[in-house]
Amino acid sequence: MPLTQLDPVAALIVIDLQKGIVSMPGAHPMTEIIDRSAQLARAFRQRNLPVVFVNVKPGAASGRTDFVRPKMSLPPDWAELVPELDVKPSDHLVTKHHPGAFIGTDLDAYLRSRNVTQVFITGVATTVGVESTARSAYDHGYNVVLVTDAMTDRSTENHRHAVESIFPRIAELCTTAEALKTLAS
Image 1 (cartoon, rainbow, N blue to C red):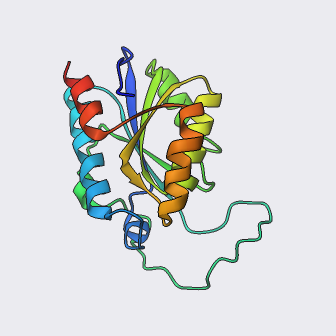
Image 2: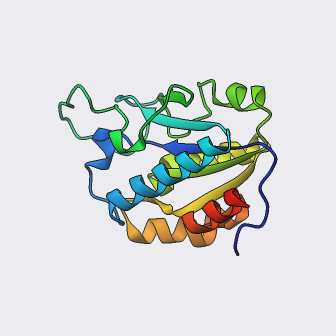
């Protein structure tokens, strides 16, 4: 269903498009995900709407899991956002230590201080950073819009399941073209 409404103050949240993550294989071409997120960032800035870039620092969040993290050394620029995003001084940077961008960060306070009621979310990975952030945004009372062609996951099956089964319960879904059209109107 195409996006039909833009709240008076909406923000774009771009999840984990950083050097160390975009170099990993994904279900969709990472260059397309980066390009679409960059297009949206430009469109939000043109309307003087907030743009938030989220990165994750290496290291596990607290709590035990069954996931075994591979032992590897990371390059020093691993957490840096990719240059194609053209981050501006007016953009807000959130560094997270958990899957979602709201826990343990200033994201909610930043959005509320700007009277944001709607968030558009893009990035990687669909079933981890994007989904966790979307769930928290929904729980915080934001109108959530997930730009499904501007996100990817390592697994095509997991991405599809999230987009078809999980996301419609917590968000509106749209494509980059639909979001850009709504922003332009």
